[in-house]
Amino acid sequence: MDLFSRSWTALRTAVADLPDEDFERPSGCTGWLVQDLVCHLVIDAQDVLITLATPADTEPTVDAVTYWKVEDRPPTGDDPLDALTVRLAAAYQEPRLLKFHLDDVGSAAGRAARLADPTARVGTQDEVLTVGDYLSAYVLEWTLHHLDLIAHLPEVPGPPVEGLARTRAMLEEIAGAVFPASLTDTDALLIGTGRRAPTEGEKAELGGLAARLPFVLG
Image (cartoon, rainbow, N blue to C red):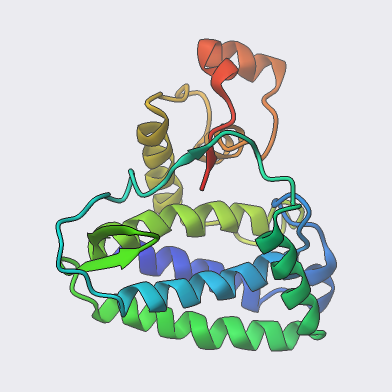
């Protein structure tokens, strides 16, 4: 839960410090500008609040790792929900309004996470898991989207190193594969999730794993 808070705080702080013109820059998500990604983060924060307020009394069906599913194709930006996010982001018109909404809902999600019982069970997406596992799963969400945020903004601080390490470990467990130690956590995540293509040298280091990439999480 502590790593959830640190990862989420770092991501929201990075957004809060962006100058307005950066909201029109591309993000690391296919087809999305930074403003679209930030709007998605608002929706994520709402999902956290909804899930933490949705108790379950049955046994967990997934944990922090099995919560994630590997999709069969990378996102194209054409999904109806993706298109809705773009329209919602445009409706804000001014970056300050989007920043305010993320700070407002995001702060509430952070407080709710800190106050939640990690052993309690919650329901989301027709699955049941403990609060602790749910928040741990979201470390991956925050970390990958933090990398998306800074994809074309190299001067913006990146995610916490602990979040990067934990997300890499989760991705390796999800994929049932270990990335070469020569790859940094950031490079392993970008290459492993298809956010960038490996170089020829990296392909050689990846060996047979290269043919299985990317692992698209949903």
